[in-house]
Length: 238
Ligand SMILES: [Zn+2]
Ligand SMILES: [Zn+2]
Image 1 (spheres, rainbow, N blue to C red):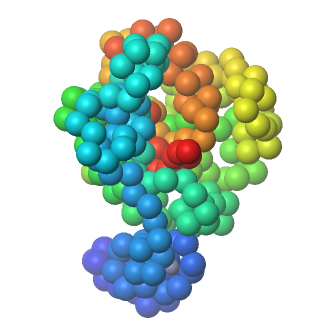
Image 2 (tube, rainbow, N blue to C red; image 1 turned 90 degrees about the vertical axis):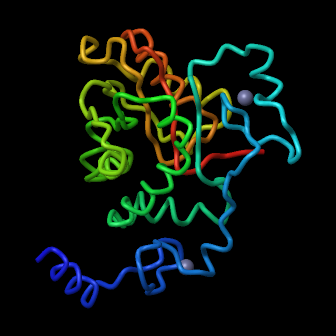
Image 3 (tube, rainbow, N blue to C red; image 1 turned 120 degrees about the vertical axis):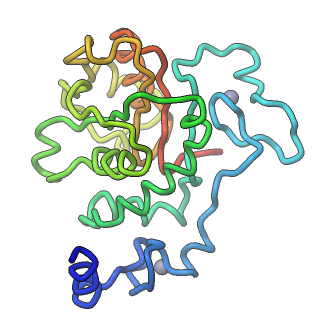
């Protein structure tokens, strides 16, 4: 029955490429041309922060992580470079209600999180939106990604423990140090007892400077989390 409904939906609302909008066959989310332009993050990369390493490198960590740079995260992973080629697909997903693509992007998160699943994780947490933002946007893109990722991994999602209590300017309107100040102390943990000793994976669509994810990790650690990982679809990399 479900399959039948899906067939009907495909006839009347055929799947479209998330990047260019062209009608596509199958469930790959992107047409072949758009897919070929996406730059994937692949090995070798730093085992801790996930930053790509020069090819041929056999070391496990980048110079910063080797120095023991104080890292709030156990691991950070992302699937693609956030650049002019991947930007439209993220923006379409986020702002043009192309929510059906959460399923496809969750598969990317699953691939990128390979090391995380191997080490073990107890709960997925979306980067929360402030209530007023949630009302205007109607959905939290990170929560949708969590929901789909949970179906693949079997790891439960906690939608309510981490909350954004302070309204901030959109991070895209800020630069450098302003981003850090803008987001500082914007999050709280509402039910710390739920997160105590848990291995948490925080999910978002894009990591730019990492200040939002760091603020989340800070309060989750204070709440007693055993470890915090950051997993995003795309990441800005120089
Ligand atoms: Zn396309
Ligand atoms: Zn590193």
